Amino acid sequence: MAVTAIWDVKDRLDCVIRYVAKPSKTWNGQYGRAAEYHALENVLQYTADQMKTEMQYYVSGVNCDAAPDAAREQFEITKRNWEKEGGIVCFHGYQSFAHGEVTPEVAHAIGIELAKRLWGDRFEVLVTTHLNTKAVHNHFCLNSVSFIDGLRYYDQKATYRKMREVSDALCREWGLSVIEPKGRGRHIGEVKDEENGKLTMRGQIKADIDQAIKENYSWRSFCKTLGELGYVLEWRGRFFRIRPDNGKKFFRFDRLGEGYSVEDIRRRLNENFYRLHRSEEEPFVPPKRDRAKGLYALFLYYQYLLGHLPKSRPPNDPEAYAQMKADRKKLQNYSDAAKLLGKYQLYTAEQLHDHTERISEQFKSLAITRKKLHNRLKRMHDSEQMQPIKDQIMELTERMAELRKEMKICTNVAEWSDAVEVIVNRIENPEISKERKVIQEKDVPRS
Image 1 (cartoon, rainbow, N blue to C red):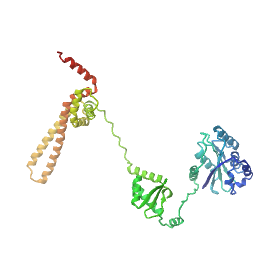
Image 2 (tube, one colour):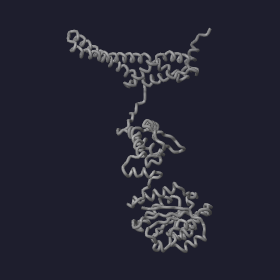
Image 3 (tube, one colour):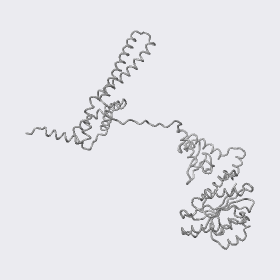
Image 4 (tube, rainbow, N blue to C red):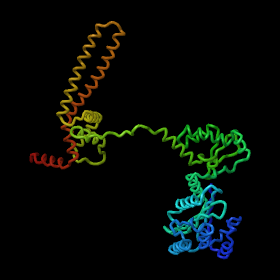
């Protein structure tokens, strides 16, 4: 268990002298008041007093010398370098352990680590361990000005809370006891009910909040669920509050306990979302597709041109543009052609011809098989035995319809490919159109 505190120190030399002359007053109920008057030089000297540190065996410096005079000089050099010699000269803190819980060596090691974690990246700190009382305790003299950026140390509730949290964390790491925070703003009757095992209003609210979090993973649905359970929710300034529909008192979420602040609830909802949507399988990575080429690339690009046919820009080749407008009515046919060419990777006229022959043979084979089934069906009279044959005939008919459609597409591709290539070249290469126009003008007979 460790108790911590920190306060600013200003230059009051007259009081400092009186205080240094009677060091026994430090732990005589006047320590906090007298410490307000510590000047930088005397605080450094006090924290490293030889009588309190057993010949200075427990004096260390973080970013500064362990000798008090040298550390004071370094503190003052830092202030002069950044031109911040006035105001608060340093901060004085302590960390006191329970009687008999730690040895001086352990206490000093914890104090050094505390100073490093809190201030070691920007400030100079002198750390000492005092043995003059029953409770071994550390003292920290912290320079008020950073030697890194010249900014002053700003002591506030947040920095003190961090000091307490880091001190508790170090105590846990070293196996020491920690003072657990108690609830605040609670009625004594509520505390007694909890001790007797009775379910209090606060306990019921927390139980319903836990249930609402389990059932949802978004803030809006979470609030809707609580509303359906009979709760009234509202923002009061920057605080979110909850009240049973028949109750008179609102409860602030941040005072319900650990894990019930707005930030904690949002975090728990997000954890629900990731837990529900996280897949243990490897993420799907689509295979790399080969770059389109040949006939497939030609029809794929022509389909794109037809889908983005310009309406306002004047065409480079009016004749080719007029042909594209006519082909746009058959855009679905060109789309089907591009899909079939890509599906079977048909890039050349030879591949297209071989594929056409192949599906034609399949079609003939299926037709012969279907004919045999029809003949077999004519000789049958039992409806139950006929049904499987009818199902096979239906499947063959559907497959033949697909092959017939593919053969039609292959025939269209063979007929259209040359014309499509000419149109694409004339649209994409205006020079071809100009040369063609010049040739036509030369061939026109003059009167």
